Length: 230
Ligand code: CA
Image (cartoon, rainbow, N blue to C red):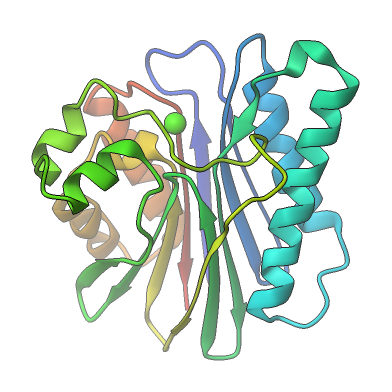
């Protein structure tokens, strides 16, 4: 397995509120929100909590537990410091075990799988626009520029009863897996992401090129990507 990763402030934002990390075969990306650097605290706290806890066996139930612990950690730090009120974060986590990938997500950070030259989106955003697309109210194209595209229907740090989306996928040699924040998918069409992943074998080159392309397209938000070549 080869791993590439990159996080970048983008061209507009003053802070980078995205966080990424991995330990052994567990990969995590978080996209924080909240004023006065609280977003940075929320995303970093989520990633640290998930990677520092004793994970146990790689199962969906254990992965969900880690995400719920991260949620609790954010909620308790909000309880302790009132200035952190309103902070929250998305999460997308991938846990690779043999030929399986366990995926958990909350919010609009995504997981993709590239196989035989084709990129597949694995996660469905928990966002207002994703729901509008699903109900047929707007198109995918309209969703990308919708004024309310940043409104999430689920995030860590909002309530203790958190619903985590979980799934298990099969992976095989030469697959590439991509975890990313909306700063990437908001700037680049999926066809462009696929093209970049196919252009170079090396996942670090892929991650660097994805971030560079999102910045060339405007870099309106923080951009984060982890690329794993199986
Ligand atoms: Ca973002």
